[in-house]
Length: 168
Figure (cartoon, rainbow, N blue to C red):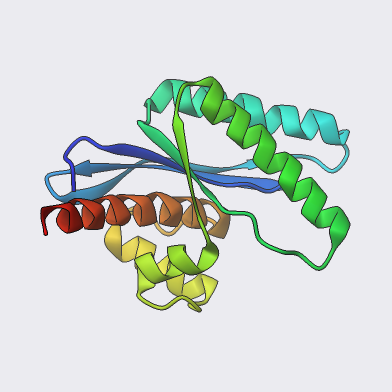
């Protein structure tokens, strides 16, 4: 793990978008910031997307990550929900790319495997493992924030694996 590496994980959603900034420090993972961007269903959908975009811009500006990680596109049964999720993802992508960040994507299976060792792990298992990998002395955050932290951890672990494989 590269010391000083700082990764922003984003778990997009139209009602709740989780974010987590993780830094590698002395071979340990440190949560720099994490939280959930909530939008009101009373707002128009474009305004909700604007809230997501602007809040992520502030998070990126404050914490200066080196890259961003989002969950890859997956298939949903409800077309309306899938479209809204795609638009929330777009708002997050534009915030990251607009800040000059390289963006990476991982499937839910890849994230769960990287964090728990089991691709079909439950949300509770992911939450607990994130809590054991990162010192979260203030307690476990909401699942949206935990999922964002898990995305960042997945990327950091994957980068370490890539470096080890390059040496072989």
